[in-house]
Length: 165
Image (cartoon, rainbow, N blue to C red; front, side, top):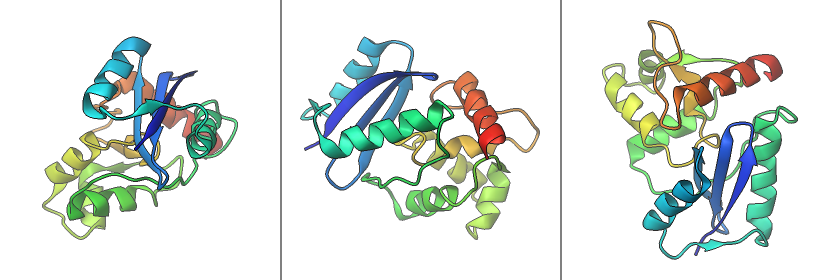
């Protein structure tokens, strides 16, 4: 069973869902209704749960981060993943705020230099944006690259971390 809440944030609407073990989804969007509908389609048994103590705490922690009030938080997460995805995601969580790596540098860092595209795919399928900071991976050629939640949001996150990191 998971509970979720949708909050307005500097990045648009922020949907955070959690189980008792950790955060199971973080989504960003500009349309609250659409964000909720897409989430419910995937998590049919989730309940809107502002009262859930874990959800409330973790949601506020993420809001404080995106508002620039607190540094990037290391929060527990509860998601299904392949061994490769988990390895990439755990490595991403070790990147300090304000630092970025390219997809190829990330592949080398996890010991699989030929897995650049697989690293990119792991970033693209990250179900807990912000909790796993895939926004810290950028193209080797420059710019911010793509971001499931909109490149403009990725740019904002990188700017936020450059100032607070």
